[in-house]
Image 1 (cartoon, one colour):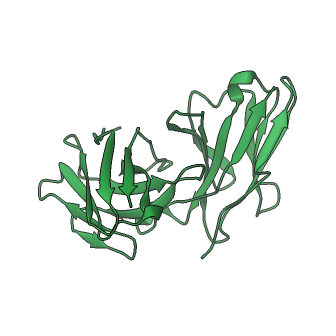
Image 2: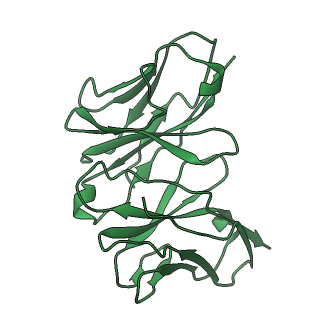
Amino acid sequence: DAKTTQPNSMESNEEEPVHLPCNHSTISGTDYIHWYRQLPSQGPEYVIHGLTSNVNNRMASLAIAEDRKSSTLILHRATLRDAAVYYCILRYSGAGSYQLTFGKGTKLSVIP
Amino acid sequence: EPEVTQTPSHQVTQMGQEVILRCVPISNHLYFYWYRQILGQKVEFLVSFYNNEISEKSEIFDDQFSVERPDGSNFTLKIRSTKLEDSAMYFCASTPNPGDSLDGYTFGSGTRLTVV
């Protein structure tokens, strides 16, 4: 499986934008970039995913580098509820079980 | 918004006993998964299930584990003879058709299994 590298932790002030980086230099052309988050004592929660183009949804934006070797999850206005561990995951889109492989993620702290 | 429902939320069992963890995936989803997370560690893949059979399993998913979808709605994980090291949060997940790459995966809120 292609690997991702994320900072262990980040801090943000409430109501400010947050940019969570992810490096995936060995990404293949068939890998989708998925982001999930896990709030304390809860299951992982889908945030966003994309292949090549930048993506927006109601939760966040995903900016993907032109060479696809890195991506950034953007939370436009951090709230206390956004404090969680954020996982960047490459999901192979060829034949298979399409399982997700979680790393350690980035623990985001939001300061009031 | 549709949810993946897991029961029970917490299960305490004695070592050597059998446990069954239950999940109700979202109704139009086709792929189902079990993951576990030992306290303070990463979320680990256990098994994937499609078209009423296992499509992939990890090294963790040994002979003491089994899965089934007995009635077309429930998706269960059975641990035959629990060990202390099976204590963990177990998460069920489902997705409509990952081959379409249009959708993310929906996870349940988990079952905390404590083996004593």
